[in-house]
Image (cartoon, rainbow, N blue to C red; front, side, top):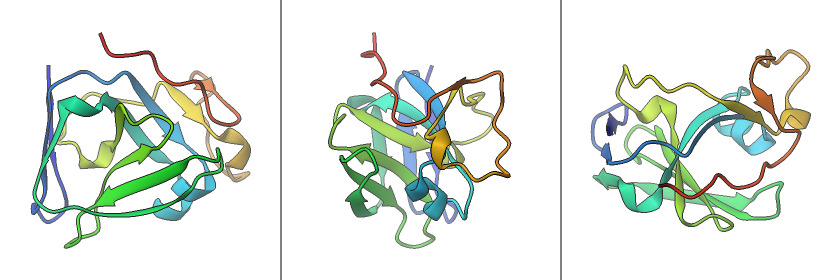
Length: 140
C-alpha cells in the first residue's frame, strides 16, 4: 500500500511507497510550538520511500533529546510536511495532516508526555513515553 498527500495550497505533493514503521503523537515543546499548543501527529516512514514534488523550505533547532531536528514545510502556505532528526536519518516523520484522507493512520503511541500541558487529553489505551522512545525497527 502507499499514501499520497499535499499541502494546503497544493503546491507540494507527496507519494509514499511503504507502510509506516510507527505512528506517534508528540507532545515535546517544539511540536507544541508548531502545532499551536497541541501535539503533532506523525507517521514515520523509511526515507527512501518518501517522495515530494514541489519546493519545500526548512527550519531547524536542537531538540530536547539533544539531536538536531529539521522540519520541512510549504513556503507558500506554511503546511508542515515532515521532520527529520540527525539521530535517525533513515526515516522521514510525515505529519498526518499532510496525507490525503482517508489514510487510516492513527497514533499508536504518545511521546514526550512529560512536556504535555495539564489539560492534554492523553489516550490511556496508547503506549506512552515520558521522553524520547527508542528508534522504530527497520522497515521490512
